[in-house]
Length: 64
Image 1 (tube, rainbow, N blue to C red):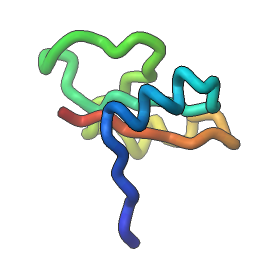
Image 2: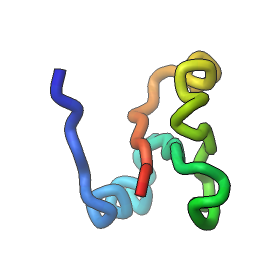
Image 3: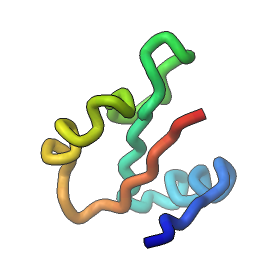
Image 4: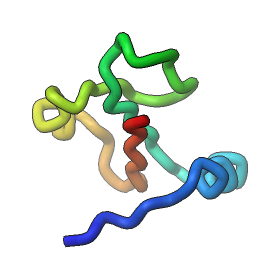
């Protein structure tokens, strides 16, 4: 299954339009600052954390 990708600009448009997008930051805590409004689950913990994410929202992961 191919996972679609969006650019940061496309994500910004979605957020500014009020779309119910959930941003999940999968970087290590030491990799940089926190994204405002994002949920943080380091990639190594994503399987355990995925069950805690709300249903019915588009999920966008950030990994840079």
